[in-house]
Length: 132
Image (tube, rainbow, N blue to C red; front, side):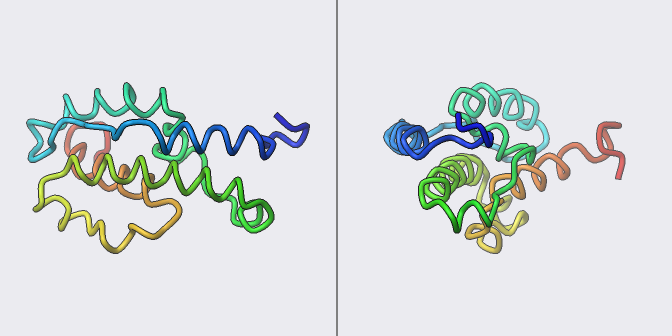
């Protein structure tokens, strides 16, 4: 790590290469609320080990200034976003892809976090977890 807290370009490039060359993430299919519990328990098992957890759960957002300043940062974040977003989107039934409007958020750098939030809010409503 650099003293500023960001990875140096070599680390960014290595992490991007490893992520891009890793096999696709296959989550259980999510069709209805009955599938949600097992789907939700699988996400961290796949995402945490690939350093996709922070961008998926929204604890790390894309730093636009850093992305403009450093191409390697942009490349890693973009690869992380694409890997996480694709895994989440492909696990959804066609109806849920429409419900969550994945085409509207696909190009957003925070697409994985946006989709994950939409999924969890949709399935956790009324469970006392998210009482909206």
